[in-house]
Image 1 (cartoon, rainbow, N blue to C red):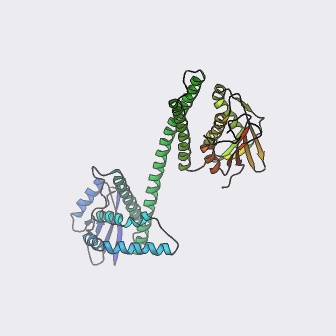
Image 2: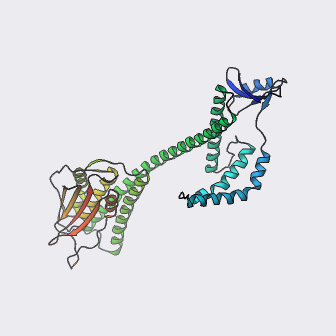
Image 3: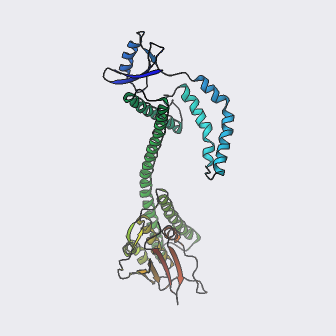
Length: 390
Protein backbone atom coordinates (compact mmCIF):
# COMPACT_ATOMS: atom_id res chain seq x y z
CA UNK A 1 0.00 0.00 0.00
CA UNK A 2 1.21 3.52 -0.84
CA UNK A 3 0.92 6.51 1.47
CA UNK A 4 0.72 9.99 -0.08
CA UNK A 5 1.38 13.26 1.74
CA UNK A 6 2.61 16.83 1.31
CA UNK A 7 5.49 18.87 2.70
CA UNK A 8 5.64 22.65 2.77
CA UNK A 9 9.10 24.27 2.61
CA UNK A 10 9.97 27.81 3.77
CA UNK A 11 6.25 28.55 4.03
CA UNK A 12 6.31 28.77 0.22
CA UNK A 13 6.29 25.69 -2.02
CA UNK A 14 4.35 22.50 -1.33
CA UNK A 15 5.91 19.20 -2.41
CA UNK A 16 3.94 15.98 -2.83
CA UNK A 17 5.59 12.80 -1.52
CA UNK A 18 4.78 9.11 -1.72
CA UNK A 19 5.98 6.23 0.43
CA UNK A 20 5.35 2.51 0.22
CA UNK A 21 4.70 0.69 3.47
CA UNK A 22 7.64 -1.58 2.75
CA UNK A 23 10.01 1.39 2.42
CA UNK A 24 11.24 3.85 5.01
CA UNK A 25 12.20 6.47 2.47
CA UNK A 26 9.55 8.81 0.96
CA UNK A 27 9.84 9.85 -2.69
CA UNK A 28 9.38 13.61 -3.12
CA UNK A 29 8.24 14.98 -6.53
CA UNK A 30 10.01 18.16 -7.70
CA UNK A 31 8.25 20.22 -10.37
CA UNK A 32 9.66 22.94 -12.62
CA UNK A 33 7.33 25.53 -11.12
CA UNK A 34 8.91 25.10 -7.65
CA UNK A 35 11.16 28.03 -6.76
CA UNK A 36 14.96 27.37 -6.61
CA UNK A 37 15.29 28.36 -2.94
CA UNK A 38 12.73 25.76 -1.84
CA UNK A 39 14.32 23.10 -4.05
CA UNK A 40 17.75 23.83 -2.52
CA UNK A 41 16.39 23.49 1.00
CA UNK A 42 14.62 20.28 0.03
CA UNK A 43 17.89 19.04 -1.43
CA UNK A 44 19.56 19.59 1.93
CA UNK A 45 16.83 17.49 3.51
CA UNK A 46 17.37 14.82 0.86
CA UNK A 47 20.92 14.31 2.07
CA UNK A 48 19.43 12.68 5.14
CA UNK A 49 18.54 9.00 4.73
CA UNK A 50 14.86 9.69 5.38
CA UNK A 51 14.11 11.66 2.15
CA UNK A 52 14.71 10.95 -1.57
CA UNK A 53 14.06 13.47 -4.34
CA UNK A 54 12.17 12.19 -7.32
CA UNK A 55 12.55 14.41 -10.39
CA UNK A 56 11.73 12.91 -13.78
CA UNK A 57 11.40 9.21 -14.58
CA UNK A 58 13.32 7.95 -17.62
CA UNK A 59 10.93 6.94 -20.38
CA UNK A 60 13.40 5.51 -22.91
CA UNK A 61 11.57 2.18 -23.08
CA UNK A 62 8.26 3.87 -23.91
CA UNK A 63 9.95 6.01 -26.56
CA UNK A 64 11.42 2.90 -28.18
CA UNK A 65 8.04 1.18 -28.22
CA UNK A 66 6.37 4.14 -29.92
CA UNK A 67 9.19 4.35 -32.45
CA UNK A 68 8.98 0.64 -33.30
CA UNK A 69 5.19 0.69 -33.62
CA UNK A 70 5.05 3.94 -35.60
CA UNK A 71 3.93 2.45 -38.94
CA UNK A 72 1.43 0.14 -37.22
CA UNK A 73 -0.05 3.05 -35.27
CA UNK A 74 -0.32 5.11 -38.45
CA UNK A 75 -2.18 2.30 -40.20
CA UNK A 76 -4.57 1.88 -37.25
CA UNK A 77 -5.15 5.65 -37.20
CA UNK A 78 -6.14 5.67 -40.87
CA UNK A 79 -8.54 2.78 -40.30
CA UNK A 80 -10.03 4.60 -37.33
CA UNK A 81 -10.64 7.69 -39.46
CA UNK A 82 -12.30 5.61 -42.18
CA UNK A 83 -14.55 3.98 -39.60
CA UNK A 84 -15.52 7.41 -38.25
CA UNK A 85 -16.32 8.59 -41.79
CA UNK A 86 -18.49 5.53 -42.46
CA UNK A 87 -20.32 6.18 -39.18
CA UNK A 88 -21.23 9.68 -40.38
CA UNK A 89 -18.45 11.67 -38.72
CA UNK A 90 -16.02 12.47 -41.56
CA UNK A 91 -12.90 14.43 -40.60
CA UNK A 92 -10.74 16.62 -42.83
CA UNK A 93 -7.43 15.62 -44.39
CA UNK A 94 -5.49 17.61 -41.81
CA UNK A 95 -6.65 15.20 -39.10
CA UNK A 96 -5.03 12.28 -40.92
CA UNK A 97 -1.67 14.06 -40.83
CA UNK A 98 -1.78 14.82 -37.11
CA UNK A 99 -0.53 11.49 -35.79
CA UNK A 100 3.04 11.69 -37.19
CA UNK A 101 3.41 15.18 -35.72
CA UNK A 102 2.02 14.05 -32.37
CA UNK A 103 4.40 11.07 -32.31
CA UNK A 104 7.40 13.33 -32.99
CA UNK A 105 6.35 15.75 -30.27
CA UNK A 106 5.72 12.87 -27.83
CA UNK A 107 9.18 11.47 -28.53
CA UNK A 108 10.77 14.74 -27.43
CA UNK A 109 8.39 15.31 -24.53
CA UNK A 110 9.13 11.86 -23.08
CA UNK A 111 12.82 12.75 -23.13
CA UNK A 112 12.34 16.18 -21.59
CA UNK A 113 8.91 17.71 -21.24
CA UNK A 114 9.98 21.18 -20.10
CA UNK A 115 12.09 22.14 -23.09
CA UNK A 116 12.04 25.78 -24.19
CA UNK A 117 12.22 26.73 -27.90
CA UNK A 118 15.76 26.61 -29.22
CA UNK A 119 17.47 29.39 -31.18
CA UNK A 120 16.63 29.41 -34.86
CA UNK A 121 13.42 27.41 -34.40
CA UNK A 122 10.69 28.48 -36.88
CA UNK A 123 8.01 30.70 -35.32
CA UNK A 124 5.17 28.11 -35.60
CA UNK A 125 7.29 25.41 -33.94
CA UNK A 126 8.53 27.83 -31.27
CA UNK A 127 4.99 28.99 -30.52
CA UNK A 128 3.77 25.41 -30.22
CA UNK A 129 6.64 24.46 -27.91
CA UNK A 130 6.05 27.50 -25.70
CA UNK A 131 2.33 26.72 -25.43
CA UNK A 132 3.08 23.08 -24.58
CA UNK A 133 5.40 24.09 -21.75
CA UNK A 134 2.79 26.52 -20.43
CA UNK A 135 0.13 23.82 -20.55
CA UNK A 136 2.33 21.30 -18.72
CA UNK A 137 3.19 23.80 -16.00
CA UNK A 138 -0.46 24.73 -15.51
CA UNK A 139 -1.62 21.11 -15.44
CA UNK A 140 1.11 20.03 -13.00
CA UNK A 141 0.48 22.98 -10.71
CA UNK A 142 -3.28 22.34 -10.47
CA UNK A 143 -2.77 18.58 -10.15
CA UNK A 144 -0.48 19.03 -7.15
CA UNK A 145 -2.84 21.65 -5.67
CA UNK A 146 -5.62 19.03 -5.62
CA UNK A 147 -3.32 16.44 -4.03
CA UNK A 148 -2.42 18.96 -1.32
CA UNK A 149 -6.07 18.99 -0.28
CA UNK A 150 -6.65 15.25 -0.74
CA UNK A 151 -3.36 13.28 -0.62
CA UNK A 152 -5.23 9.96 -0.58
CA UNK A 153 -6.93 10.58 -3.96
CA UNK A 154 -7.41 7.19 -5.72
CA UNK A 155 -5.18 6.42 -8.70
CA UNK A 156 -8.12 6.27 -11.13
CA UNK A 157 -9.32 9.70 -10.05
CA UNK A 158 -5.77 11.04 -10.34
CA UNK A 159 -5.56 9.76 -13.90
CA UNK A 160 -8.95 11.32 -14.74
CA UNK A 161 -7.86 14.60 -13.16
CA UNK A 162 -4.57 14.65 -15.12
CA UNK A 163 -6.37 14.02 -18.42
CA UNK A 164 -8.97 16.70 -17.71
CA UNK A 165 -6.32 19.26 -16.76
CA UNK A 166 -4.36 18.56 -19.95
CA UNK A 167 -7.53 18.93 -21.98
CA UNK A 168 -8.45 22.20 -20.26
CA UNK A 169 -4.94 23.63 -20.61
CA UNK A 170 -4.91 22.94 -24.37
CA UNK A 171 -8.38 24.47 -24.81
CA UNK A 172 -7.48 27.65 -22.91
CA UNK A 173 -4.10 28.12 -24.61
CA UNK A 174 -5.47 27.57 -28.12
CA UNK A 175 -8.37 29.94 -27.45
CA UNK A 176 -5.98 32.57 -26.11
CA UNK A 177 -3.75 32.20 -29.17
CA UNK A 178 -6.68 32.51 -31.57
CA UNK A 179 -8.06 35.54 -29.74
CA UNK A 180 -4.65 37.23 -29.92
CA UNK A 181 -4.39 36.40 -33.62
CA UNK A 182 -7.87 37.77 -34.29
CA UNK A 183 -7.02 40.96 -32.44
CA UNK A 184 -3.81 41.35 -34.46
CA UNK A 185 -5.72 40.78 -37.69
CA UNK A 186 -8.33 43.31 -36.63
CA UNK A 187 -5.65 45.97 -36.07
CA UNK A 188 -3.99 45.13 -39.38
CA UNK A 189 -7.36 45.15 -41.12
CA UNK A 190 -8.21 48.57 -39.73
CA UNK A 191 -4.86 49.92 -40.87
CA UNK A 192 -5.18 48.49 -44.38
CA UNK A 193 -8.80 49.64 -44.58
CA UNK A 194 -7.75 53.22 -43.87
CA UNK A 195 -5.04 52.93 -46.50
CA UNK A 196 -7.53 51.45 -48.97
CA UNK A 197 -10.00 54.28 -48.40
CA UNK A 198 -7.25 56.81 -49.02
CA UNK A 199 -6.31 55.04 -52.26
CA UNK A 200 -9.96 54.89 -53.33
CA UNK A 201 -10.44 58.61 -52.68
CA UNK A 202 -7.24 59.38 -54.57
CA UNK A 203 -8.41 57.35 -57.56
CA UNK A 204 -11.79 59.08 -57.46
CA UNK A 205 -10.04 62.45 -57.51
CA UNK A 206 -7.88 61.25 -60.41
CA UNK A 207 -10.99 60.16 -62.34
CA UNK A 208 -12.63 63.53 -61.76
CA UNK A 209 -9.47 65.38 -62.80
CA UNK A 210 -9.19 63.27 -65.95
CA UNK A 211 -12.82 63.95 -66.85
CA UNK A 212 -12.40 67.68 -66.24
CA UNK A 213 -9.26 67.86 -68.37
CA UNK A 214 -11.03 65.97 -71.14
CA UNK A 215 -13.98 68.41 -71.06
CA UNK A 216 -11.58 71.34 -71.35
CA UNK A 217 -9.92 69.73 -74.32
CA UNK A 218 -6.58 69.43 -72.55
CA UNK A 219 -6.65 65.64 -72.92
CA UNK A 220 -7.38 64.36 -76.39
CA UNK A 221 -9.55 61.34 -77.03
CA UNK A 222 -7.02 58.57 -77.52
CA UNK A 223 -6.39 54.92 -76.75
CA UNK A 224 -3.97 55.88 -73.94
CA UNK A 225 -6.61 58.09 -72.31
CA UNK A 226 -9.24 55.36 -72.50
CA UNK A 227 -6.81 52.83 -70.99
CA UNK A 228 -6.03 55.22 -68.13
CA UNK A 229 -9.69 55.83 -67.40
CA UNK A 230 -10.51 52.12 -67.56
CA UNK A 231 -7.54 51.23 -65.31
CA UNK A 232 -8.63 53.70 -62.64
CA UNK A 233 -12.17 52.31 -62.72
CA UNK A 234 -10.93 48.72 -62.43
CA UNK A 235 -8.62 49.55 -59.54
CA UNK A 236 -11.41 51.24 -57.67
CA UNK A 237 -13.81 48.33 -58.24
CA UNK A 238 -11.11 45.90 -57.11
CA UNK A 239 -10.65 47.82 -53.87
CA UNK A 240 -14.38 47.74 -53.20
CA UNK A 241 -14.45 43.95 -53.68
CA UNK A 242 -11.42 43.55 -51.41
CA UNK A 243 -13.11 45.57 -48.67
CA UNK A 244 -16.18 43.36 -48.90
CA UNK A 245 -14.11 40.14 -48.71
CA UNK A 246 -12.17 41.42 -45.70
CA UNK A 247 -15.33 42.44 -43.86
CA UNK A 248 -17.03 39.09 -44.43
CA UNK A 249 -13.94 37.07 -43.45
CA UNK A 250 -13.43 39.11 -40.27
CA UNK A 251 -16.45 37.70 -38.49
CA UNK A 252 -19.44 38.01 -40.83
CA UNK A 253 -22.12 40.67 -40.81
CA UNK A 254 -22.60 43.14 -37.98
CA UNK A 255 -26.30 43.82 -38.21
CA UNK A 256 -27.91 47.04 -37.02
CA UNK A 257 -30.82 49.27 -37.99
CA UNK A 258 -30.03 51.34 -41.09
CA UNK A 259 -31.91 54.36 -42.43
CA UNK A 260 -31.72 53.77 -46.16
CA UNK A 261 -32.67 57.30 -47.21
CA UNK A 262 -29.89 58.72 -45.02
CA UNK A 263 -27.34 56.53 -46.81
CA UNK A 264 -28.79 57.68 -50.15
CA UNK A 265 -28.45 61.32 -49.10
CA UNK A 266 -24.82 60.73 -48.06
CA UNK A 267 -24.08 59.02 -51.37
CA UNK A 268 -25.67 61.94 -53.22
CA UNK A 269 -23.45 64.38 -51.33
CA UNK A 270 -20.32 62.29 -51.95
CA UNK A 271 -20.93 62.13 -55.72
CA UNK A 272 -22.38 65.62 -56.23
CA UNK A 273 -19.09 67.12 -57.44
CA UNK A 274 -18.55 64.29 -59.91
CA UNK A 275 -22.11 64.64 -61.21
CA UNK A 276 -21.77 68.42 -61.57
CA UNK A 277 -18.57 68.04 -63.58
CA UNK A 278 -20.43 65.75 -65.97
CA UNK A 279 -23.42 68.08 -66.24
CA UNK A 280 -25.74 65.70 -64.36
CA UNK A 281 -28.34 66.91 -61.87
CA UNK A 282 -28.89 64.79 -58.73
CA UNK A 283 -32.31 65.04 -57.06
CA UNK A 284 -33.08 63.46 -53.69
CA UNK A 285 -36.69 62.41 -53.13
CA UNK A 286 -38.79 63.04 -50.07
CA UNK A 287 -37.53 61.37 -46.87
CA UNK A 288 -39.34 58.08 -46.36
CA UNK A 289 -37.80 56.98 -43.05
CA UNK A 290 -37.37 53.44 -44.38
CA UNK A 291 -35.22 51.30 -42.08
CA UNK A 292 -33.65 47.92 -42.78
CA UNK A 293 -31.50 45.53 -40.79
CA UNK A 294 -28.03 45.31 -42.34
CA UNK A 295 -24.33 45.90 -42.03
CA UNK A 296 -23.58 49.62 -42.36
CA UNK A 297 -19.97 48.87 -43.31
CA UNK A 298 -21.22 47.22 -46.50
CA UNK A 299 -24.38 49.12 -47.28
CA UNK A 300 -22.85 52.60 -47.17
CA UNK A 301 -20.25 51.92 -49.94
CA UNK A 302 -22.80 49.81 -51.84
CA UNK A 303 -25.32 52.67 -52.01
CA UNK A 304 -22.52 55.05 -53.02
CA UNK A 305 -21.44 52.63 -55.76
CA UNK A 306 -25.05 52.41 -56.98
CA UNK A 307 -25.31 56.18 -57.34
CA UNK A 308 -21.91 56.36 -59.03
CA UNK A 309 -22.95 53.65 -61.51
CA UNK A 310 -26.07 55.69 -62.33
CA UNK A 311 -23.88 58.74 -62.99
CA UNK A 312 -21.66 56.72 -65.32
CA UNK A 313 -24.77 55.50 -67.16
CA UNK A 314 -26.27 59.01 -67.56
CA UNK A 315 -25.90 61.31 -70.53
CA UNK A 316 -24.75 64.87 -70.12
CA UNK A 317 -27.62 67.05 -68.92
CA UNK A 318 -29.56 64.11 -67.44
CA UNK A 319 -31.46 64.18 -64.13
CA UNK A 320 -30.92 61.35 -61.65
CA UNK A 321 -33.61 60.93 -58.98
CA UNK A 322 -33.09 58.94 -55.77
CA UNK A 323 -36.16 57.69 -53.93
CA UNK A 324 -36.53 55.26 -51.01
CA UNK A 325 -39.81 53.42 -50.43
CA UNK A 326 -41.21 50.41 -48.61
CA UNK A 327 -42.72 47.59 -50.65
CA UNK A 328 -44.38 44.98 -48.41
CA UNK A 329 -41.52 43.34 -46.45
CA UNK A 330 -38.78 44.93 -48.54
CA UNK A 331 -37.12 48.32 -48.73
CA UNK A 332 -36.36 49.74 -52.18
CA UNK A 333 -33.88 52.37 -53.27
CA UNK A 334 -34.70 53.40 -56.85
CA UNK A 335 -32.27 55.49 -58.90
CA UNK A 336 -34.16 56.75 -61.96
CA UNK A 337 -32.34 58.34 -64.93
CA UNK A 338 -34.32 60.31 -67.51
CA UNK A 339 -31.56 60.19 -70.17
CA UNK A 340 -29.20 57.22 -70.09
CA UNK A 341 -26.78 55.69 -72.56
CA UNK A 342 -28.45 53.02 -74.70
CA UNK A 343 -27.61 50.97 -77.72
CA UNK A 344 -28.96 51.96 -81.11
CA UNK A 345 -31.69 49.34 -80.68
CA UNK A 346 -32.84 51.09 -77.48
CA UNK A 347 -31.57 48.40 -75.10
CA UNK A 348 -29.15 48.86 -72.20
CA UNK A 349 -25.69 47.46 -72.43
CA UNK A 350 -23.70 46.04 -69.54
CA UNK A 351 -23.62 48.40 -66.54
CA UNK A 352 -20.17 48.60 -64.93
CA UNK A 353 -19.57 49.34 -61.25
CA UNK A 354 -22.40 47.20 -59.87
CA UNK A 355 -20.31 44.22 -58.71
CA UNK A 356 -20.00 45.53 -55.14
CA UNK A 357 -23.70 46.48 -55.04
CA UNK A 358 -24.80 43.02 -56.16
CA UNK A 359 -22.53 41.24 -53.68
CA UNK A 360 -23.63 43.44 -50.78
CA UNK A 361 -27.30 42.92 -51.72
CA UNK A 362 -26.81 39.16 -52.03
CA UNK A 363 -25.29 38.70 -48.56
CA UNK A 364 -28.25 40.65 -47.13
CA UNK A 365 -30.79 38.53 -49.01
CA UNK A 366 -31.62 41.26 -51.54
CA UNK A 367 -31.13 41.91 -55.25
CA UNK A 368 -30.26 44.60 -57.79
CA UNK A 369 -32.38 45.26 -60.88
CA UNK A 370 -31.42 47.26 -63.99
CA UNK A 371 -34.25 48.14 -66.36
CA UNK A 372 -34.80 50.38 -69.37
CA UNK A 373 -37.84 52.62 -69.21
CA UNK A 374 -39.86 54.26 -71.94
CA UNK A 375 -38.04 56.79 -74.07
CA UNK A 376 -34.40 57.25 -73.22
CA UNK A 377 -34.69 56.55 -69.48
CA UNK A 378 -33.61 53.68 -67.24
CA UNK A 379 -33.58 52.74 -63.55
CA UNK A 380 -31.31 50.99 -61.08
CA UNK A 381 -33.11 49.45 -58.10
CA UNK A 382 -31.69 48.02 -54.88
CA UNK A 383 -34.16 45.88 -52.92
CA UNK A 384 -33.43 44.59 -49.42
CA UNK A 385 -35.55 42.63 -46.96
CA UNK A 386 -36.45 44.75 -43.96
CA UNK A 387 -35.65 41.82 -41.67
CA UNK A 388 -33.12 39.47 -43.35
CA UNK A 389 -33.13 35.77 -42.57
CA UNK A 390 -30.79 34.89 -39.65
